[in-house]
Length: 333
Length: 150
Image 1 (cartoon, rainbow over the protein chains, first blue to last red):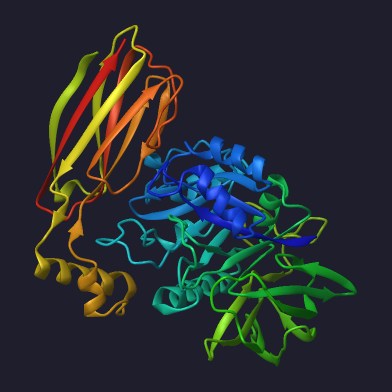
Image 2: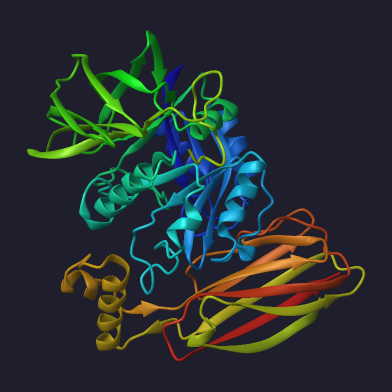
């Protein structure tokens, strides 16, 4: 398994984007993505053209849609579900998420703490938090300056709150890519762990929650427990685990690159362990947890210490398949 | 070419977050649909109202300031936002979600644009759906004209 650079939240002229499907694909190739998901608002009209353009350019384009409801947005990846966005209500949103997952799609809560009405009506997630807990993933970071500001902080807090409840919900970033940006001021990548960059494998990685989000840092991260190595998103046997982390620079990151790393934080439901870390040097940290374990990487960027990367969680105990991976749908512990 | 529908519809603030369904009937033999839809007003130029609404909504949603007064002012004027969907007798054929207050769509078996899918323009009852994503004026008037080409 390796990690592939993905953009999971994009738009074209089929909704309110300014790039045609072909232009989006061209730009994604220029930006070094291995795979993108086309998630136009409430339509899949651009998907065929984007997939065709992707085949010509060697880019995996995964069909998707952004359910753009009045009360919140969700990126739905896979293109197999038959849910009509107009049928989604505050009362049935949980059932609609489940229905999409049962068809094979992966559902992520999109930019839940972004300002909604009257600036971007529907962008703020107004659904009862209990009703969105079944989502596979959560946009912990979104759009420009993803690791800065109030919305980023509140999203991160809510995601940790969901993990604390014992939910298995992955961390993803959504660029929410609407227009051609030659050099975005600050943006992130979602890296998805998969056997290949094929649609099937990326979708599988997203379903497992084998992801991390980053501004400029590659994070090779795994957990070792009872002599066996587990990737991000895995369910580990209960007990002590050793978290192994190796970070490198993303050399072609186009915005401000991190100058240096300062520390890795191993954040679990039991507390936080901090360890110094530098580029190119693997660290190993022992920890125990009962629900979740997340790795955060901090470093200096623009001369200020910032949170540079967040992994999805390793989970303790509970239901897992033969490979120790998180169930891909209906992800309650 | 003949006119299938030519109407105006008024939405009020209370219609926000609702779908208004407008049925229309297509006879046999139609090959293409030309749809022109526009709404007015697009903007609410009342600066005092806009700033107060942003501030109130911000505190309700975030519980703390998300932006400065200057940043709030840069978001003005606030605007209305409507989305459009079309259902053929065979099912939904897509949605047009963008901020433009004037849009035109072409729908046929071989081609469609604006967020819609190419489909047979079969005879029967169709529905044009106006989804009121945001209404920040007392009323919004929508003019809708659908023409059919045989």
